[in-house]
Each structure stands twice: as C-alpha cells, then as structure tokens.
Length: 82
Image (cartoon, rainbow, N blue to C red):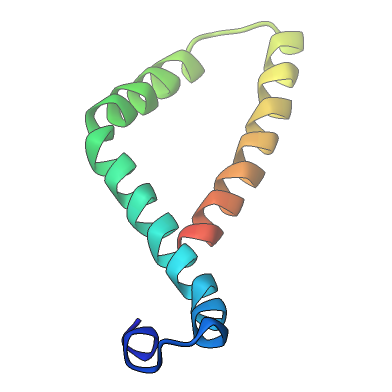
C-alpha cells in the first residue's frame, strides 16, 4: 500500500491489487466468523447430537456421502483463509 501512495503509478496499483484483495477477503472471513461464532457453535452441537442418533443403514450412507463433500469444502475454505 505504501508503494502506491509514494509512486502514484497505475502499474504499481495493479501489482498490489492482488494483495489488497487477499487482505480484504481475510478480513471479511474473520469478521464473519466473529459475528456468527455463537450460531456456528450451536450448529456444530446440533450436528454432533444429530449424528449420535441411531439411523438405518441407507440413511447413514447418505450422511457419509454429504460428510465427505463437506470435508472437501471446509478444507477449501480453510485453505483460502490461510
């Protein structure tokens, strides 16, 4: 950011836009987490309680399918955050 202010160049600005975008995305994700922490905790507790219930085999297969998909999406989200 300081390079943009000092040099007043469009080329420098375009070079730095990527870093500014990453910083903004990280801040938005962190802000979203802070605002929704209580909701997220409640949701995770409900998921655990729901998962501990006895279920038929077919339903467990469906849950496992969506569980694997959710893990992939959460790794993608976590990878974007760091």
